[in-house]
Length: 96
Length: 478
Image 1: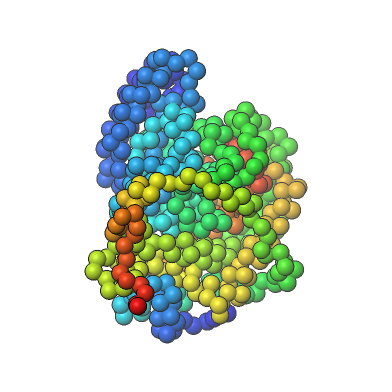
Image 2: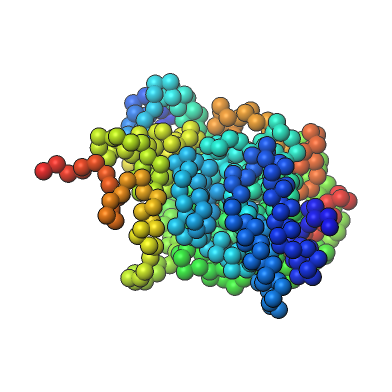
C-alpha cells in the first residue's frame, strides 16, 4: 500500500503511460491521484486469505486457432494516418 | 397520427398494419433530434437513415413474414461499431475513425430490419458518470439544462427520454446505462456479463463491459433483450445459455416473490432524501405479497475501491492501442516512434481518460500489483460468493440506482472522488457479473426523476423483468 504519491511517481507513471503533462497538470494530478488512492486503500482492511488461490479462474473458453479470412487490408488501412503499399508508416525504428 | 412516446411494440403494430410508414416514423424522430439539438445528445444523424427506412417500407409492402424490428429507428452509443460510419467513443482520438466491421449487436439490429438513425454522445471511452467528459461537450439532462444527463451513455438516455428514437443502445461498465436511465426517467438494463456479445463494442474494462438497452418501458426492454442476447463465436466471454422469450414471463403478480435488501445499502440510503420513496416501494411490494428479507454484506462499501482499481487497470491496458499509428488521430513530424505515441496521446486524450490510465498503470505496476489489483480481484470473488448465497434464498435484490436526482453540470468535475462515490449502487452488478435494471419510480425534491434498481441472479433476467415490470406499471400508485 502506498500513502503518498510524489512528483517522482507521477513522472514514472507518465512515462509508463506514454502521456506528457506540464507542471501545472502534474500538481493537480498529485493531489487528485492521492485522493483516489486514499479511497483504494480502504481495501487493505479486508481479509482475503480464504480466496487467494482462486483469483485466476479461466474466464473464457479459447477457440481453435484457425487461419481464415479476416478484415480487408485496404479497408483497414483507410484509417491509418500514414501508410504505404499495404503497410503502416512510422519513423525509422532500428538504426543500422 | 400522433407518434409521441410510442413504445417499440406499439410502433411495430402500427408499421405492420400500415397505419404509419417507416419513412414517416424516421422523419418524425429526425425532427425530434433536430428540435432537441441543444441537449447535445446526438453526435450524428446518419445520412442514409431515410434510405434505410424506404427499404423497410418496401419489405413491409411486399413480404408476408417480417423481421422482428422492421422499420424501428434506433440510436446507438458512439462506441458501438457500425461498418462505414464514424465511431469516435466520444474522443478526439477517434474523431475520424470509420468502423471497418459491424459489432454483433448492430448486425442483429440490421438483420431484424431496424433503422440505425445515428450515434449518441458519451463520456470519452465510457469513462465517467455525467457525460461531461465527452470531447464533444456535455449532454444535458432531458428535464433540466443545468443538470447532467448522467453517463457514460448520457446521449442514449436523453434520446429515449425526449423521444428522439424508439429505443437506444448504450454500454454499462459500472452503471453507464442504469445511472443515466435513472437521471432521465426511463428504463435501462445492464444484462448478465456475456449475455449480449461485446464484439465491436470499443473496450473500456473488458471483464466488466456489457452492452445495455434503454427503453420507454420494461416490456420493450424484455422484448429487445431476447433479440440482442445470445452466444457469439466472436466474443469468447459470451454466455452459451439459452435465450428466453422474456416478454412471456411478465406478469402482474409478485405474490411470494422473495426480495432481499442489503443492510449496508439501507444504512447509506437512510442518510439521503431518497429514503421515503424507496421505502414506499418496498412497502408496496410487501403489501402485494412479496417477502422482504434483510441480508448483510459486511464489505459492501468496498465495491467502490474494488471497481476503481479493476476498471482503470483494464482501461489503461485497453487504451494502449491508441498510439497514433494504426487508426487514430496523430501528431505530425515526430522524430521517433515513442514521440508519436506520447505526443498523440497527450494531445488527443481527455483529462479523465489520462487520469485513469495513470491510475491503472499505478495499480498494475510491479511494486503495487499485489496490494491493489490482486487484492481487488480477490474481494470481487468474495462479493460474487456473497451474492450467490443471497440468490439461493431470494429471487431479487432491490437497491437505489443513485443517491438522488441528477446533479449540476460542473459541480463534481474538479473532484474525481466525489464523482466516483456516485457509483456506489451501480458498480456492484458489474463486479459480480449479475443483471440489473433501473426503472423510474418517482421524482425527488427538484422534480427530477429517481430510479430503483432491480437485481437478479446471473442469467436470470426473467425474474428481473417480472419484478421490474410490476413496479414500473404500478409506480403511479406508490
